[in-house]
Length: 83
Image (cartoon, rainbow, N blue to C red; front, top):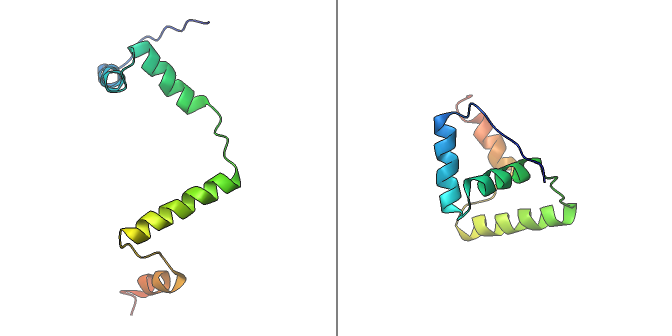
């Protein structure tokens, strides 16, 4: 495995990483690696998975009583205050 040394890390970033590592029960090194992996790793999503996530979100919003956006609602919102 390679080794990477970081210099000049702002104190606020260092503290934030330490808090995040504690919260995730990781070492500081492990947390930095996890952050980099999340940032760099390719996200492999297929269209079917994405559509399933969208449908699930719509269902949760509907169950929470939040009406879906429709073309007529958006058109009316655009016209509000224009008359």
